[in-house]
Image: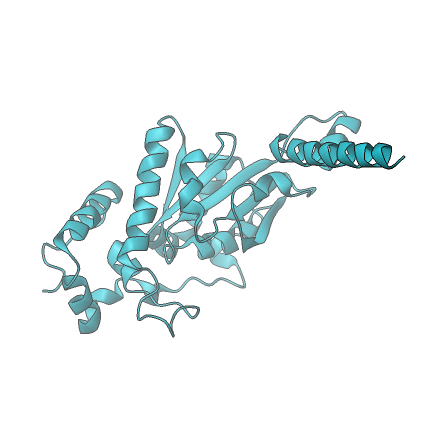
Length: 250
C-alpha cells in the first residue's frame, strides 16, 4: 500500500507540473478565458499592447493616458510582457507597461503583441531624478542603464526586422498629445473615449522639457560622460530626430 501511495503521489506531482507548463505555453489567453471564448463561439483574442522604453522616457505617462481609450484595460503595475497572457479581462484591448528589466527580454517579444516604444532626448533622460532613487544617486538613469535599453532595442530590430513598432517621442506627447493619441488609435484600432488633452487627471507638464539646457550642474555632468558613450547618444539622436550638441558642456 505504501508503494502504491508513493506511486500515486509521484503521478500527481508529474501531472501537476505538466498542467502548470501547459498553462504557461498556451497563448495568447489564459485557459479560463479560452474556454469562455470557445463556449461563446468567439475566437477573437484581445488586442495586446506592450509599452517599452528607457525609464524617464514617458512610459508611465503613456501608460496613464492609454486609459483614455474605450474598451481598454491598463494593467496598473509594471510587468513583463508575459502578463498580457495571464490577464482575464472582458475588455478588447489589454495594455501592460514594461518592468525595470524587461529590456533583457525585449528581443523575444511575441509577434502577436503590439509594441509602443517611448523615446526622449537622452540628455533629459540622463539628468532626470526619481523619488525611488533620489536618496541613492543624483540622477535616476545611469549611462549603463540607458545603453542597455538602447542595445535591447537594437537587438529587437535585428531579431524581428519586420516588426511594426510605434515610436512615441516624449516631446510629441507633451506638445501634441491629441495627435499622438490619433496615431496610437490608428495603429492599434482603438476608439477614443476621451482626448489626452482633456483628461481630468492629465499629468502632462511642459516644464519637463530640456532642463539640461538651463542647468549648469546638468551640463557639467553631461560634459563628463565618456566620448564613446556620447557617440552612442549621437547615434540615438540621429535615429529619432534629436539635436546633439557637439559639446554638451558648452
